[in-house]
Length: 425
Image (cartoon, rainbow, N blue to C red):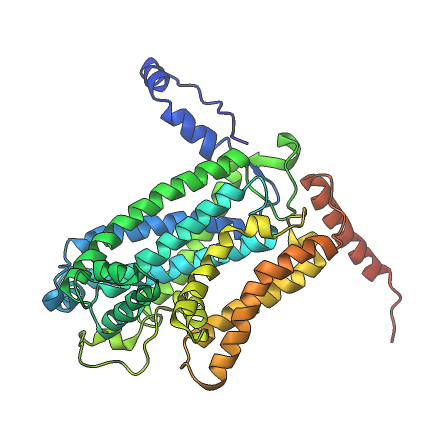
């Protein structure tokens, strides 16, 4: 599926350089001549949005690191120094803090789009697994970054989450002491988390490079889930068609992002994090950032500590096995009516777990969390494998062009039928 570059250097210097390092030809073949399915909708722009947000996070994070000090007694004050004394420091911090939330909003839409259209199916298994690895690295990076302001929720969030590893038999206590750098959350913990928080985004960038490479090798999926058979019939060049759509989507997303930065910069955070960390005062209700809440609800729904930890990690790990758990040969939910119903039930359950994770672990919240947790795993381990045998998909069109023409023909027939219907009084 790689695009065949038609780039020809115009002068001798360019020809000399291209014959030794064909980087311009590589860019031309992968970002200009690369063929993409002509029926991609705006859900396919979130890959570009995520790439853009990764650059925003890395650049803003590097500048913030120039002013931050990973020393527990002064960490909170240094964040206030950035906000009050550094030129446009408030803007940098709000971009970085809200950028993490924007990153996760985009990645969750990206994941649900992949689930709906079957983008994990052969030959895209490795592409999907690389995406799950990126997601895990994102979660680790975001958690460690949340600790750096060293407010109340940062400190106690670090204490609660790192303590979970102690439930692992034999090596649990060793892992916790390594993460802490001692026998409690303190200055060594902050240093470790700052170093890892700075390093991991570059690891994410590296895996993203592999992700894009794998994508360009096997080709993009499309809303109809049809293999592209004819470059001239079913595809268009990446530039300008997909490029302009990506640029427009990024601009719209930036408006949404800017609204949080300039109007409600603390809406997605927690007010307790504006209180300096105090090991002697536990917050009334310890909650992680919103993007961790579904897994936090799964963790709390299991009464056993080890069982909760295993369920939480299994909820993420099961995504990596999705290409083999879904036994249907049809990719897109457009042609899978039964799968479509269960998909939307799963979306409701996932959002519901997020809500339940933000509520106290008591009463009916716990009961519903357990029901939703059971359904979460049933969806992947039972429903998806069975659907491949019991579901009767709709007939697939022969090509993307046929699917588009059939859609327009059906729409035209509906309009004509409505126009020719007798008028009633």
